[in-house]
Amino acid sequence: MTSPGTSLLRAGEPIAVGPVVGAGAGGLFSDGDFLAIPACRGVVVLEAADGRAVLAGVTGDARRFCRARLDESPPDAGPGGRPKADLRPVTARVLVYPAASMLAGEAMFLEIARERLPRVARLASERRRGWFVRWNADDPTPTWRKTNLSDVGSGSTNGSTDGSDLLGPFGTKDAGGRFAEGLDELFELCRYPRELEKAPRGKACAYKEMGKCPAACDGSERMASYRERVRAGVDLTREGVPAAIERTTVELRSASAAMDFERAAVLKARLDRLGAMGKAPMRHARTLDRFAALAAGPGERGADVLLCVRGWVYALGELCEASEAAAMAGGVREACADAPKFDGEAARVEAVGLFAHWLYGAAKSRDRAVLVPDDDRGGDGIERTLAALAGEVCKRAQASGDEDDGPDAGGLEVRDG
Image (cartoon, rainbow, N blue to C red; front, side, top):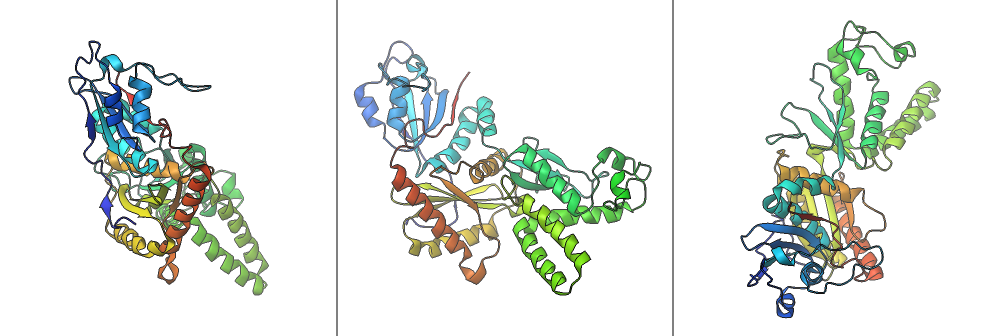
């Protein structure tokens, strides 16, 4: 295992090949040039003679990636493959930023693209986004709205400068709305925000008649009381739906044992709603200040592990044996305790979005992502999670071989202009 710890993931110094003499005027990359390009995972940047970035992309094989775009006779795209533009006339130099895994390459790509191709980098990051629900109990009208963090500004803490909480991530925009509607039901919150805006002169709806809303809109309830229920909904999310399910299950058993059937019926309905809120694509919802996720992908010898805490990404190294998980778990605990707050910078927004994308990623992927367990029972919960995560990644990698490490395996590529 490479030394575990809490080092922030950064793109290192690139391996440069070129400049090619005569680029832009008939100059070509030779076989020797291509052989000088490492056949490694990482991020590739193609540069023009004036140093301008022409293209940036993630790849499982940098040499093949470059041949497909710069060779005089590039490999055929194959059935269903996309043809590659001929970038030979404008490319003078190749920069390769090696990565320990495809996951690390994707994380590095966002940093490099943001620096080298800022106009188009945002479009690439939009492809790797999760959805959140913004909620501020202190708003004049404390109602929720959905966001993919594209409206978050620099200097934010929990996602905004106004004290709002961000609940999520969710796999889809619709899932964020369904989760928030679940909180509306659990805490008897307003389903008609326009009427709440008029409080205390709003018009109560049928939920008041059914006894499912105290109706702050028409003044039947003080707004201060309503805000407390909004905070309770945020607190439930911060704790996590699984914890709420566990607690409600205990209460339901107690009510049933006491033959308090009315109370048991209420708790059963609550448990059913919580169960729906704990399923995909909502199962990873927390609050952004509690966001901590692990991601692992095939490395050189084992599973390369990354950690994201509130948008700060750490490279933990490779985990090859389950016995090495304890040392890495110490680095996870350290980062979770010491990571700065979410600050709204583009790097943090993109990192949270990327890990959210991985958390809800395809089940067949060789890469895996999980939340850092909240309850580190016995002091080894994180250790057990790491061992299981790495074991699954290595098992899938052995089954698939190198089939996912082709030149276009990363699926992220941006081009100037």
